[in-house]
Amino acid sequence: MSGDLPYSPSNATEGDTFFAAWCASCQWWDQEEGCPTHGAAMNFDAYDDEYPLEWCYVDNRPTCTGYQFTDNQEAPTPRCLNTPDMFEVLG
Image (spheres, helix red, strand yellow):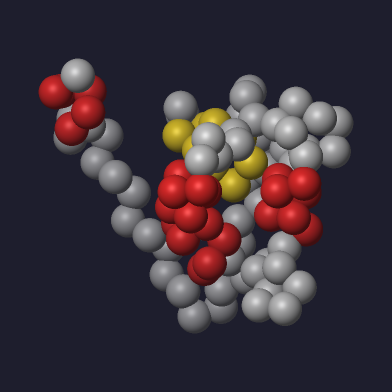
């Protein structure tokens, strides 16, 4: 499953937030080796052929479709789709 558009963080803060949400708790992440998907995303532009397809928008949200839970981790509770987004309401 992949999204239509590649996702690339626009700045370091957004990248850190994405990393904390996806990479830091993924079974593919290794403290010494990192992750091939993360490495490719850092080394290539979003529209390069080498850019990882796993980093994409799914339901208009940045996602890593290669994400795998660690053995002792429970799936996160998804955000309620009936609760409006603060920025959409205030925007």
